[in-house]
Amino acid sequence: MKIKNSSPRFREVCPLGKRCFPKKPCPYALERIISKDKTKAHCPWYLDSEQDNYCFWVYISKNKNTKKHTLQEIAKFTNTSINNIKLAETSGFIRFQKNSKEVDWER
Image 1 (cartoon, rainbow, N blue to C red):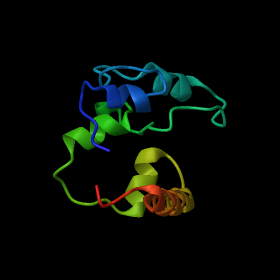
Image 2 (tube, one colour; image 1 turned 180 degrees about the vertical axis):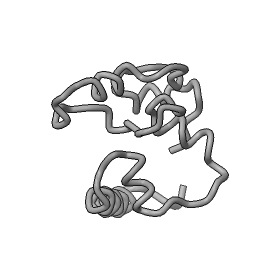
Image 3 (cartoon, rainbow, N blue to C red; image 1 turned 90 degrees about the vertical axis):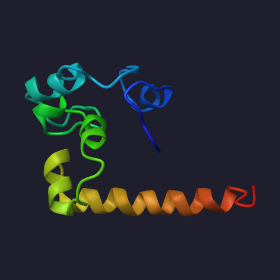
Image 4 (cartoon, rainbow, N blue to C red; image 1 turned 60 degrees about the vertical axis):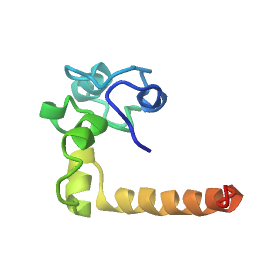
């Protein structure tokens, strides 16, 4: 999915329904950082990067032409474990396979 700085697509993925990438630290991310309860639900696109306003999409838009990242780097950026990254990757492949069977690729 291609996401631009200001697009309906970003509004679809942003839990706050924002139209544009955050120009200052995302309030949803700041809420998570300040909270002592790290199990509390937070933005699935949270990124441990102040320079990118804690937003995965800001980071990707600024670094789309750079090297591929290792699982360790992705886990560090997203503040999760490598096993969670592998699980997300696997579930994504499964969803893709399921959905690709339903798509008419001849169109």
